[in-house]
Length: 357
Ligand SMILES: Cc1cc2nc3c(=O)[nH]c(=O)nc-3n(C[C@H](O)[C@H](O)[C@H](O)COP(=O)(O)OP(=O)(O)OC[C@H]3O[C@@H](n4cnc5c(N)ncnc54)[C@H](O)[C@@H]3O)c2cc1C
Image 1 (cartoon, rainbow, N blue to C red):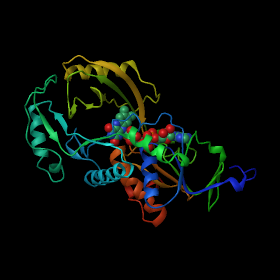
Image 2 (spheres, helix red, strand yellow):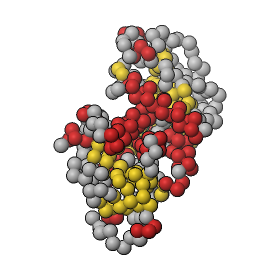
Image 3 (cartoon, rainbow, N blue to C red):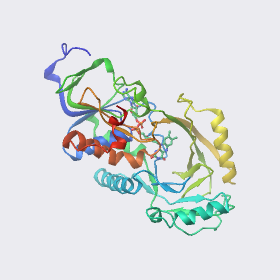
Image 4 (cartoon, rainbow, N blue to C red):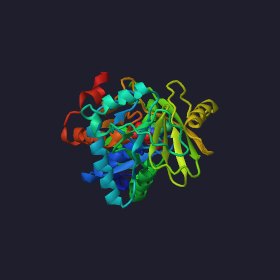
């Protein structure tokens, strides 16, 4: 680590925490710090993040196997409370409520749905009725069921809004690990001195010398934005392993793919063809592809997030591993990390970095 010499201490900015990364993890942590009157400084390269391109769908159920997701009910409740508070505070709409229409693939699928909709926890979200009403422009052979209390968080609006509100606490640059000075009581980075530093780098954590040995896997996701005139869909469709989600101006987000092997960030023709094939099997109206893009989800070996402090440097922290549920997880996990740093409340074992000792 470099020495402190050469830094003009009079110009130094002092904050409680430096945050590296301004995706959904960085923003939710910064907001949590702000709500608790802690100061922060964010360094973000604005490159390759998955939050800005994610659909931002929040859905606490797992529609492949008709289960609740990990802590689904609690995370759903906390996330909506957190994002509603942000909407009020910054006077910006970020929550778009949409039911999800889960299209069935067979009569067996219908029966499984009916069974699942009677289960505790799931019954709050899965409507037991099998719907058969035709939707113009959408192929439906076995009908569909309604997943309630779901929707979309516009992560793009959220991040941009946060950036505008905290211009003086944000620097657009790549974090240079050669410049960090760590001692027991403080962290120094360029002209910033902080009590703690928290890395929220998404999948780019694999390049972080402090945490790169943790079992991050990464799952590449590709998606399309398509324009479908006169489809007029005001619900999210989930069918054949893709979502079709309404956006503005008759545009729809269509995706996504999952690939654990390909770690290149660029979209591929192969996956585009796959998405088009899926879309063609669901939508009968003509459409135009506006965008085809990709990013890598920060997934982990055991499919749980990884949060906590570095084993040696106790003022260096990690908030990561949100996989494909960043929107649901980020508010609660930011609070867990905040409570750990400032109140010494232990992080639940299944999310703590210590499980990899
Ligand atoms: C196609 C696709 C669709 C998805 N859909 C959904 C969805 O519908 N719902 C949902 O909840 N989740 C979804 N996800 C998952 C979601 O995107 C992630 O869980 C979440 O965005 C992870 O957030 P993060 O803040 O940890 O990381 P990121 O969003 O990746 O943010 C990391 C930030 O850190 C910055 N950074 C990294 N390294 C450095 C460095 N050295 N110096 C400076 N800055 C750095 C990056 O520029 C970036 O801005 C989807 C993901 C993909 C790929």
